[in-house]
Each structure stands twice: as structure tokens, then as C-alpha cells.
Image (cartoon, rainbow, N blue to C red):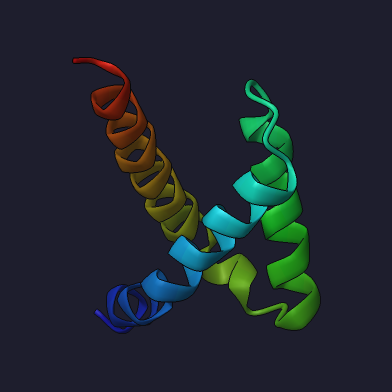
Length: 77
């Protein structure tokens, strides 16, 4: 349960990081590279991130999915 709480506490930072990466690198089709960059950055700050990375990765995927769904709904009339 501690890992769940940790990931939920990280969620605002994860959202901010995903937005920052999307703004800095607005090229589509680079999701894997952006995810790798996020992991490298997080691990360089705290190597303990590797223990929760699978959960962080899932959270990132959920955030990206929601952001992409929002973009699609904005485009459609």
C-alpha cells in the first residue's frame, strides 16, 4: 500500500512532467523516448524510483491517454 500512496503523491508531478515533455518535444510518435527521458531524469534524482517504476510507467500511460483523448475531443466538432 505504501507504493500506491507514493505513486498517488507523485501524480501531480507526473502530470507536470508529461506536460513539460510534450511542450519541449511536441513531436508525435516519440512516446517511448519521452518515457525513457522521464525515467532517466527521475532515477538521476532518486535511484529508489526504480522500485516503483512499473507503477509510475502505468500512471504516465494513463495520464498520456487522458491527455490524448482530450486533444481528440477538442478537434472533433
